[in-house]
Image (cartoon, rainbow, N blue to C red; front, side):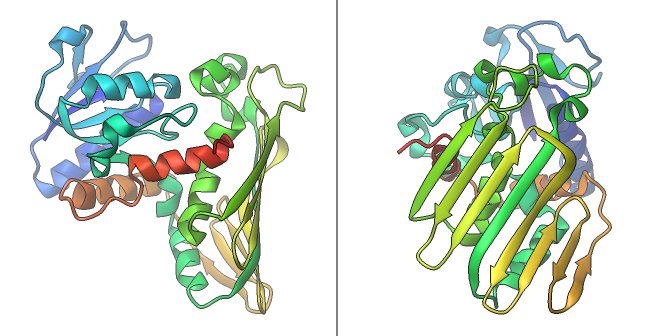
Length: 304
């Protein structure tokens, strides 16, 4: 498998290590390059061939990993779209919704990362909801940005809207999994802005109300929560179900603890990349192609 990475920061290197594990297990030979616009300030894997000139980019990659800053995704995809067969793009797809006509004919070749879908407790929630009548869902993702971006949160991409920062993009996972669980809403409303004293230029709060024919889903995202929270509460016809993604628990008001999973943080990323290699690369399916991801982004950034 001939692969090129665009961007090789922490998330890029995580995907690279997982790719090594999967290819080794499946006996797939792996040849990896990485395009960098300048010499890396941090250590990079020695077995990756570094490329610093666009003229050195080959024309026959099996997969391109787009793991550079969000604001560079569109430019990178235009540059590489005729040089690779498949594309693994880190979320969110773009910093705002764009016209994707240049990619739509081959949309299934573009997979947009959505690792929370592959978390063990999320998979248990999906199975449980098959037999439930849902009236309402309340989603929260609350975190304290200085603890999350520990080096210097003020210089992280999260703090800079020009790089694709802002809670509405950083935590687009929440809207993605809501759509994965319940499909696209018939109508959505969004409010976002900066309300805290954090030293950032991006939005630190995003609120969404999604309307379906038979339910409402409320979504709350913030950068300033002193108590980390990441969960969904679901009011059904006969119960209150809570899925806590930090505690890895699924509970019912009627039944108590339904499921508790012990899972390494990397497991969902490994499961997702396995899906990409086993399903997307073999043309079997792609559950988050570029069109789907762009539609979720339109909800996140309230674009009609």
